[in-house]
Image 1 (cartoon, one colour):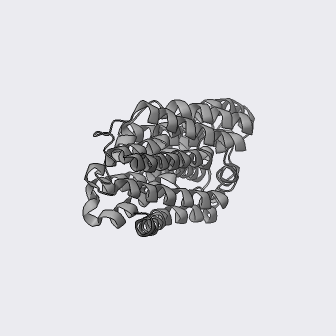
Image 2 (cartoon, rainbow, N blue to C red):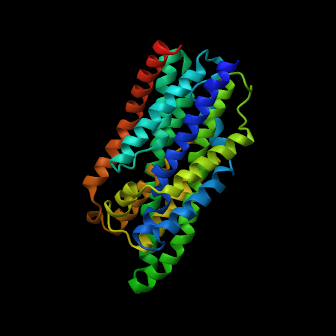
Image 3 (spheres, rainbow, N blue to C red):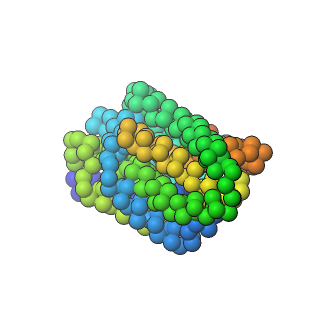
Amino acid sequence: MDSMMIVLGIVIFLALAFDFINGFHDTANAIATSVSTRALPPRVAVLLAAVMNFVGALTFTGVAKTIGGSVADPAKLDNGVEIVIATLIAAIIWNLVTWWFGIPSSSSHALIGALAGAVFAGAGMSGLNLGGFKTIVQGLIFSPLIAFAVGFIVMTIFKWTFGRHSPHTVNKGFRTGQIITAAFQSFTHGTNDAQKAMGIITFALVAAEVQDHLEVPLWVKLSAATAMALGTSLGGWKIIKTMGTKIFKIEPINGFAADISAASVILTATLTHLPVSTTHAITSAILGVGSAKRFSAVRWSMAGKIVASWIITIPISAALAMIIFKLIDVFFI
């Protein structure tokens, strides 16, 4: 029992480390547009994101339950805790690699892919809940397409509505509005992304027979929310630069449209208990807004690199987790 508590301690540490890294990796999701348009000073934007991430993380638990039980049933896994360790190490490695190179990849894809790979390595195909995994992957695939469409529609409406007004006046108003949308975007980020670590910790608690249900304990909520908020407070400046300046030149009206579009998609997913990529949502919304503004204004070569990172994240994370699980199996079990 003592050794299991030590192993669980390692799981909790890794899960909170993932949440912390997720915080500074995905800070750009919430504040890239408001920083690039100078609606908010960088440090103020990061502080706002940290606070709203914390609030959002404590508000819902549906996504955590989906993560904790939809890919596999932790109660049926003999080596569930080791599977979680492999999952978290693989997801952390991929997050750090993509952060280092300033690539706005998906922490959600990394975690889901790694969990599926680790379960497959530890329990075979029979250990995977293919129906639940398929539903999650469908949400991850369709949410950016929806965010692109919503961003395109919102920006088109703004063009029709404000097209005859002075650009200076319009942008001045939307620059103020971006403070609200940055807060909303940060809140929705917390409602979805922080719950993934909560779900993984709960998965491990059930696998270790510490609890027999997928309800998230209060201490897990507080720990995950705090870890993400602390990570967010450091900022992810490389990714902020990519999203705020390298896709297309964002003006306040564009930033407002992108933020409100992405945040709406993320909150809808949270309310339906679906884990989605906040990175994909905001990046796709920016692409949709840019396309509505002027198709040629979007740097599609950069967009292509971002999309390529989306495609490879799940298989690479899964492969990493499989390798790490096998190493754990050989040297530690």
